[in-house]
Image 1 (spheres, helix red, strand yellow):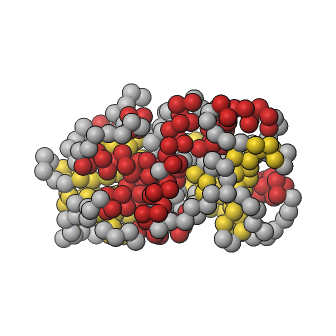
Image 2 (tube, rainbow, N blue to C red; image 1 turned 45 degrees about the vertical axis):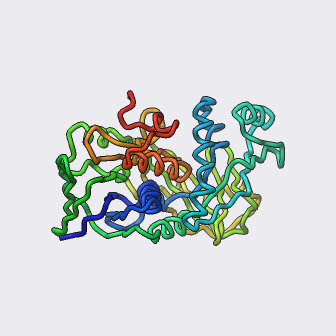
Length: 336
């Protein structure tokens, strides 16, 4: 028999751990159940990039505003949980920097011409692995290695069973299971929602080369600094779940990334992650129609950027607080 925490979060990616840390900071005892091993959040550059994501996706002013507000939540969240933010901004190299600057300015972002492109101070970053580890150590959070095989609830509580026979009970459960198939026992319409999430395969490659001063991006490629070199990515391949690296694609992407920097370096490991996406590109975050069952799923490629926002929306729903303004855009019950 397992424990009976206030909240059980199923999944230890960035959304699951952000939700867990937010709830623990509010005084809840939270257990995170996860089978262990790499997940999509760990195969990421950790970019908190509302400006260049808005530019690349050609989003509406309303969407750009949501992404910027999500980024703004990171300051207090990082301070609370001992996470290190890197705020050196990001560079963009494209064919028409003047138009890109005008577009960013129109969306409410700062940008200036530099180095054959532009620099914006509005994009930050966080290193994924240390951040995931720190969130998993948050006071009030217990991470348990377990593969959930069934989930059943009634009006009072949810019962979660692991593949080794352990059982947990909690009044509230948060599904943060990425692109995993629906857990047996989920209500039919929730299972259908989970099953409809689109897998999006991406890969990044580590390269041991002198670290640039900031993230540098161009059409189809980015280079992100780390403590041990750079990460170069990233592909976006909708509909794919396979995890075998495409080494030819990696070589092409690395060559393009190193060309941005004007340097070379020994190529390291290529890693693959599969993210989830919805039709409108925003995550599913908040309560379902079933008491105590909440979702934190499908952030597409902006899981790190949206983590604290999703955490607040889900935590407010669990506590029955008035929803923040941006919650409606993430509502799992919103029209498709």
